[in-house]
Length: 198
DNA sequence: TAAACGATCTGCT
DNA sequence: GCAGATCGTTTAT
Image 1: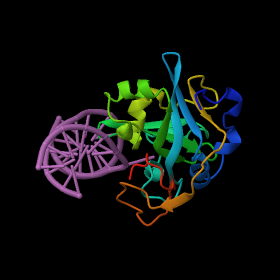
Image 2: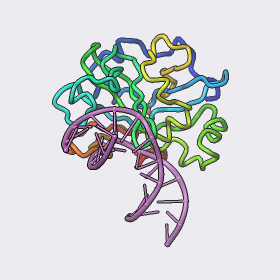
Image 3: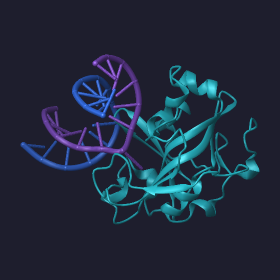
Image 4: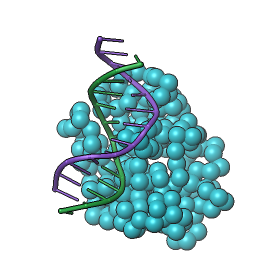
């Protein structure tokens, strides 16, 4: 699996224009790639979390639209990159424009441009390369400047189908690190994958 | 303008 | 496994 998936394999608007839990579930096993210095770097999505448009106090959209979370209310397939604890996390907007739901990408399995990712991460071990939402952003060189990017039209991002998809079983658990709505089962993982955040 | 709070990570034990 | 660092955004004086 050395060649990145071709552009024709990219997910369409109809994929993102669905409830966030469905999108989160189906993103497992898909390829996430960022073009940096003319090279594609990225890997396979193995852990995601859904944040709902309404009745979800853990979601950034729960208290309405602000300048900082505005892209979460943009059209499905938009990137929402937000700062937390002096780091960044990467989300993909879901559902109809204006609703305010998204899927957080928590972990990927490194596949393409591993050497480049290690440089971005400061030559850390492969285990700690992309094992959490902020690590993943640093490895892929994603920051706030990418907030609001549209996946469907961007030439520098690619989210695509790959042969095989998610080989392992999908498990559902409560979300990590949230202080509210801890009973909700909105975290989706490829069970047993060594690159999960926990 | 001051203070508190995270959808976190790292280094050290 | 745990304590401490870290800084933009929000909420309170």
